[in-house]
Length: 287
Image (cartoon, rainbow, N blue to C red; front, side, top):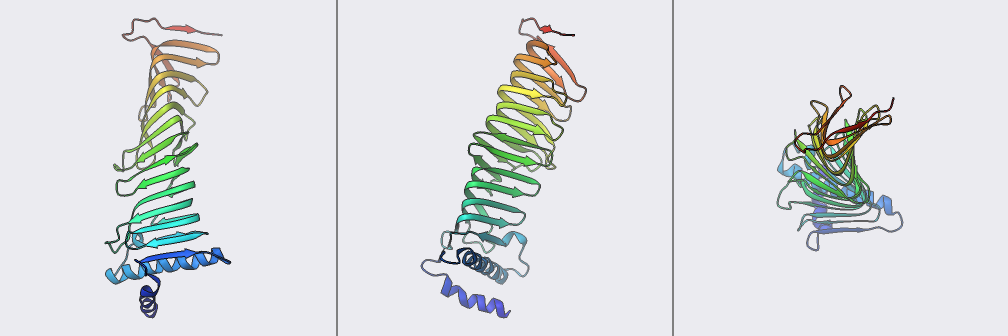
């Protein structure tokens, strides 16, 4: 209780000039940042405690930086510059610079949006994402990663691209991941799917439900069989990939071509189909 009273006496001294707190670091900059940021976190917790008898973990926000930290209580903005770090609950973000927004009218100070730039690493539970920039809309439950090499790693696989990855978890049991730009999905068992654009649906436990690939698609099985096509649909429950448009299947020097194909990963069976295209299927088999 004495600590709480002391912190409340400090609030009007520290939070002034339109409720702004700005820490400029000199000399022992890193230590100063730690102390100042810890004070910000304690002030948040103290104010939350006065409104709630049992504050939740989600209300505790930890922010760290090596260069500067600005806290604007009027607009509800934290800005951390220099090896920045933000943590709330089970989620954390590291980046060169981070801007975090919350609702200033609410006591809990739950973050609603985070924009991080430079060497971004985002961790939440068993998932880790990285890229040059992260724009996370927490209320909508989705984030956009952009940069030259972006990737999301989960417990059962990983996806990467050279332009962007949009991760939408608004439906927690059907999380949609859209990767654009020479995208690659690698399952934990080694199955690999390529495409200029990949759209994957992933269950809460990280299990892949489906994945659609568009343009320059390719699949590689565990034993090395490779198939290319214009488009591809993979169903996780059956381990079957359906391919269409200029299909070619390569296996140890053998080649099969056609308009459509099915790759059964589970039984290691490849089927080439003509369907309604009117074109013949062909194969070159080498003993």
